[in-house]
Image (cartoon, rainbow, N blue to C red; front, side, top):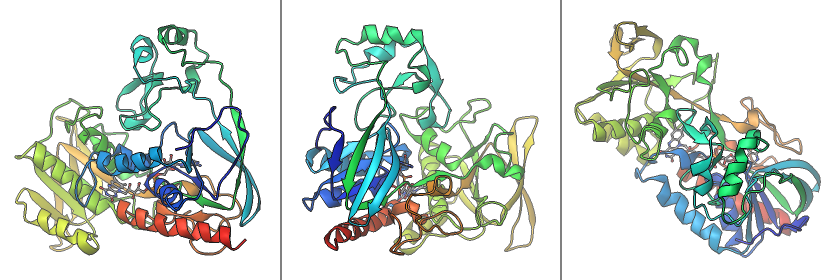
Length: 425
Ligand SMILES: Cc1cc2nc3c(=O)[nH]c(=O)nc-3n(C[C@H](O)[C@H](O)[C@H](O)COP(=O)(O)OP(=O)(O)OC[C@H]3O[C@@H](n4cnc5c(N)ncnc54)[C@H](O)[C@@H]3O)c2cc1C
């Protein structure tokens, strides 16, 4: 990876990739490994995207370290890639083959002398909600976003950069790496193609009123489950009830929480059934006696992922209920959750009491909230419409909900499409 010079104000590359998740990283790597310069611009302090927050990922159930670490190594070793973090894309002018893009780099307040020794964090008195763990725990105001964070460098929460208490951190740093007066700076990128790989966010579960998220402590979402299961997560890998910290014995997965529902997300996010089955494997490994109940409309496990579903069906502690959960109520005596559903196979109305309920919420494209530039066409749900020949090139889950392997395939193709724009010039 080429270092970014502090006094550089203009950079040139074939392709600018916006979003440093698995899709954006793939576009950058594939481009650079063809010997072409590429800029990878990520808005957060580190790259890795949503995959970095997972405990394991299907189909092989490997930890994100195995996939992301390999990609990070390829990025670190390749002089054709420049990674810009805390990067905000501004005005884009020009036309395909000849774009000029303004990029504002927000201050990290920590320079590249940082060795990640952690002395600053030890003395820091300020705590803040840790967004990486969905607010389930706190981090210090000077922090490393997560264990795999790249670049592996501390960052200061901008809200506290001017707080007097941060001076203690500056004094504790023996490398002079903390600069609380760091300012934003703008660089111009001259590129031939712009790829938008800005990914997804979880659907806001508080909007699904009948399922009680935000009202009942023991209703969590699938992304929170990923962090709980992670050994470096807020509960050190234990699946516990937020109300009383007890480990679970009976858990309910509520599929299509807000998905395939005209009032919320009318589409299927394609990965939630597999994600819940993956979560069930976490539970069954940790708590062999625990019962798992999954309520579904129909189980979607396309292609070779069907094997995973078949394996789950063989597990006698895994109960599939065909029926959408209409309502969740809390049992005030023990804060258990009562799941009301209609079994559409038997016609029976069922009530199932569990000690933790997990809502399988869907994927919302970040482009639904923040439209991409250059009048890029979006579909009804805010995903980028691919291959229109207009606007930026979308890839990965910015184009449609997709799993990691599909994102990588899509991104590889997009890298080539982007280079083709360069040659048509
Ligand atoms: C609960 C759950 C579990 C899942 N489990 C699995 C699994 O086990 N296996 C599997 O294959 N798939 C799984 N998936 C799907 C997987 O998360 C996606 O395939 C993957 O995240 C897609 O990668 P991406 O790069 O497109 O998007 P993201 O991972 O969302 O990355 C997008 C990146 O772009 C950045 N960004 C956003 N906006 C901007 C901007 N304006 N400027 C700059 N940067 C920006 C973001 O900060 C982020 O780093 C799961 C999904 C869910 C919902």
